Length: 299
Image (cartoon, rainbow, N blue to C red; front, side, top):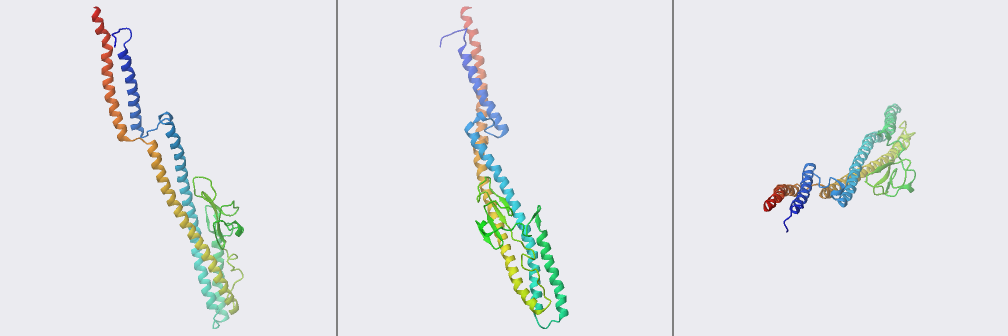
């Protein structure tokens, strides 16, 4: 290289090298302090786009998991109320069987009928008041309108449907909006006295008691069907939650690979940039001193 004074090319080259090293050092410091490999769009435009879409999906899955948990709580509330109704129905059947026996007097049956009627009224009250967050669950307002709406499962009063329902509760348990995959509607059967066929039942005489036994068998079967449906839905929702957790875990791992900083690598880059900065500054100082050395040739 020729020896010049007006243009110190060595100094310009050193300045450019220092500028590049400074950028690398700044980037390493920023990544180490933030923990992110991508802090700005220009760090990795393609990676940023992929990462942002993944983050949106992850947040959607988090909310879907919360939704499924709320749905489990709702179904557990309904099942708890049905458990109490179950006890009342069993006791009513026992009273009806007892009153069917011919050795009881009229007074005995009148006394038994008082308890029988109170149990029936309590079943009706529980069914009409059981609710979760203002949604009444067993009063019949959540029952399927018709069997034709059932597209996934149908057991007696209850149904799961992917169609828009004016009565059922929408379970949105996915991060997107695909019917049958991300949401469906759940209908719960009415468990009131009328729905169970208990209206008008009594144990005032032998014939009425025998008729009550048959009706209570049907009512217990209907109640068991509803409890089975609720139990299967809770199990289904728990599996949904587990699947969401696994999917979310893998999505977070993928997003982290794209967006998060590798501290071992960034620390190596930081150390390298520090050394290059020190040597670059030293070499720039030497390059800047060359014109004065050249001036000695004409001194």
